Image 1 (cartoon, rainbow, N blue to C red):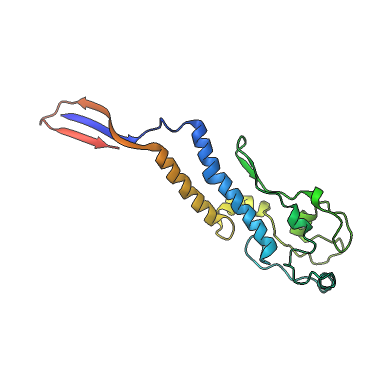
Image 2 (cartoon, helix red, strand yellow):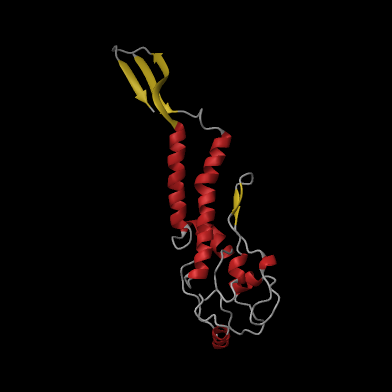
Length: 203
């Protein structure tokens, strides 16, 4: 009996550098772009990153915005400083990371209360934009530990769940293309048997 093993899988093309580049370009970079789009939409659509409506303005803030001629602007935009402070997707292939952040150096004192802008974006996430506010109004325009915990950001379809599934599918397809080759014999051996026949095993 002769056993022949054939395979159409090879690891020769899959070097470490190629694999890391595939992970970065097929998974990490697309997810960074999707996260940036979520943040951008949080300033355009009057819904937060969970696609939920923002809590309404206080009457005083609404009057101030209307008086400034900004009443028609989306809810998260007054002068637009916070929106303009959001960086592009910053990539680092060496560390396999993408970063989106608010550059506080771009935040002036153009808010209606004339207050300094330190941690301005973060204060919006907690609702503590004014120290005398009795009922904080959280506006989730950016991702926090709430979304990171338990990989919720990658599992929740309202966050990046759908984008993660698409990226994983693209990565799997690319990986398969690097592993797949023409069918070839990778081993053959004669074995004693009661009957004389050949067997081919494909993997």
